[in-house]
Image 1 (tube, rainbow, N blue to C red):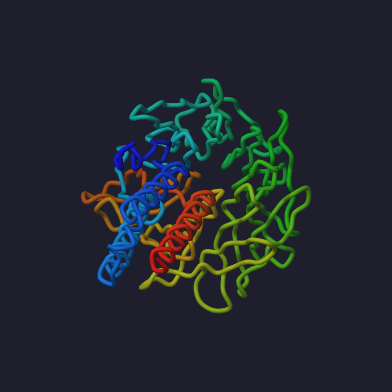
Image 2 (tube, helix red, strand yellow):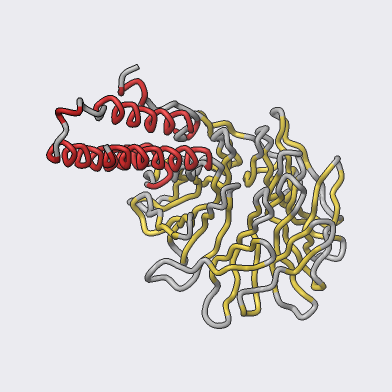
Length: 393
C-alpha cells in the first residue's frame, strides 16, 4: 500500500483520529526509513554517507511530527462558530441532536427543525436531551401554569409538581431520570427527581429553596440550595444532599455533572466576583477567567472533562486541558455556551451583527485518545532506536 493509502483518515463521528490512522502513519515511516537507509556494502561506507543518514532521519522525524499534529488537529485547534438559525440552543447529545427553543421548544438535527408543541398552553422551552433522544423542559398548560415535561416518542408528558403550581425540568440521564425544580404546597421551590413515574422532593441544605440542573447515569445530581444561614451553596445529591462549599466566599451554584461525578458551576472566591469552578475528587478548583474579565460561570461538562460556560456577562468559553479559550461570537457582542457533548461539539447562543440572538454550534474537537498516544510513543521509540542503529553502522 502506498503512502497516501496509509495516511487516509478514517471518517468517524466528530472526525476523531483513530488508533489505526496514527499506527499506519508510524508504520509507514518506519518502513520508509528501513528501506531507504539499508546499510550499503562495506566498501561504500564513509563519513559523508553516515552524516547524510542522520540528516535524513532528523528531517523525517520532523515531518512525522508535523503530520501527527495535523492528524490531531480536531483535538488541538478549535473550529468556528456556526449560526444554526434559531433562537437558543441548550443541550446536545452525542448523536448531534440539539434542543432549545425558537418561539417554542424544538429539536434541531441534520438541518431539520422539529417543534415539540406544548402541554396545551402558549409557550414551551427545551433544556436537556439524552442519548435516546428523550427531551425535557417546561411548557405552559391550558390554565397558563408552568409544568415540567418529558418528550419521548413524539409525545409530551406533563410531569406534575411537588404540590405547588409550577415545575421546570432541566436535565435527563440515559436512564430517563429527570431533574429540575418545583414549587411545593407552602410556596417554596425545591429540587426534584422524577424517576419511575413519580416526582420526589430532594429537600434542601437547611434553607427554603433548592434547584437541580444536572444528573449523570449513576443518578448523581448537581444543583444549588439555600442553607440554614441563608447562603446559597452548590450541592451533590446521591441519596442525600451534600454541601460542596465555595471558593472561599459565601456562595456557589452547580449546573452540570458528568459520568465521573465531576461537577461545574460558579462560586465566590474570598474576594471579588464569582468564578467558574470544577469540583472533582472532593475538591473545588477555580478555573479562572479570561484576560479583561473578572467573573464567570460554568454550565456544562462532558465525560472528557471539557468545560463550557460564560465569562463575565458576555463571552462563551471552553476550558480544556488547563487552558481557557474565548469562543468568540456570531458577530455581536455577546455569547454563552450551554453544553458540550463527548465529541467536543458545543452549543449555546450569541448575538449577531444585527443584534439578533441566535443559537450556535461550535466544534472544539475531541481530546486525543489514550490508545493513539500509546501508539505515538511506541512509534517514536522505534524511530529513535532506528536512528541509533544507523549511527552505529
